[in-house]
Image (cartoon, rainbow over all chains, first blue to last red; front, side):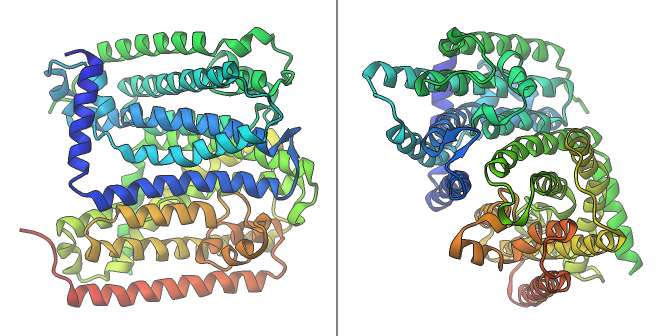
Length: 266
Length: 263
């Protein structure tokens, strides 16, 4: 059984289990939707007081938030369970997974898969569409395809960050919170234009942890704006390549981590 | 009283076992502090003096709110350990102790909060102070009043979360309530944005809810932007007393009426 097939089968099993408690699933999904809607509300409150922040208008910020939140919501749904790997190591459950004929990465990623995380998608997509409609941009089919492609690349980049965070927990079992700084913190960071951050932080998110390619760089192309740091324009088209490179690095980290793994034993 | 002091000490010790988790948590609070600060700086640069704050006040607000996550437990929503004990029936052991359920769990919570103050509040504050130079309280009296305000914030936060945890007696599963409680705490406390920039009726309502007493009011006491410290502390005290009394009454109802889970 290939990894994708295994993932889908296991995700289906978890969905069937969750549907035994449909009201509970509906409430948990709704909570995720409301949580993301409150993020959008925060943006609207900020723009109740000003027409621009750091030179960016309300539709532009909604577009940035929408693309980032969509990418991170998809990544969280697909691989968000990876952040609990520390608990699997402590309880010895990872040993059980290693004896099974399915990739341990797939097993940990799909563990307790829940469609409730997709609840964040509705407000994210709404912000994206409202923002996109309000932009002073001619939406050609090519530009729409470009946007879809960079959101998919962003999902791959965000997922890779979750994988690296999980691999780090092989070294530091209790450090799940530290990867939150890059996953949930990354979503927070990419929700607003990078122009509001210190230049060194923007360089860090461009060249070290490639969060700038989740939405900022390609969005500059869509919005037809100059880069505040004066970085070369070809970076705006680099998201798919960066996504592939990030995924490769994440795969190497995961393998290195798994090789170092010693069971907690008893 | 000694038993509660011991429980609080054990709560602190328990938290201290997870040193690496604490460092990781402090790191995350610091990162969020900087990201949120950037948004507030951009807003206050566009609108200097908005809501009576200058840029320095807004930055200080942001790092203080991050530093308060561990001591005031602003984002916990409920009390997971208590909810779990109610769900499994282990709470029967707690109820048979010669100590009040509410006071017992408050002591435990306070011990963990004490640990959080030392190791999870100071790193984000220090980082914020190094980079931006945070505001300090105007005088010693303000510092003392801020400490009182934080104590009241801790009581209010516990009051809400204890009620949420007790909900498990009736619902068996506290996740729905915890989710609602966490979202309300995030949005209505000032963690997401200072409450005094919420517009119109929404702003008037959120500033009256108990969550305002957990983050917004203590920080206003610190910054000296309350428009009447006595009124601010009275507002916090009202919510703290009301919620703790409600928790006490509900504990009584749960003891008398509810069948404990278990086999």
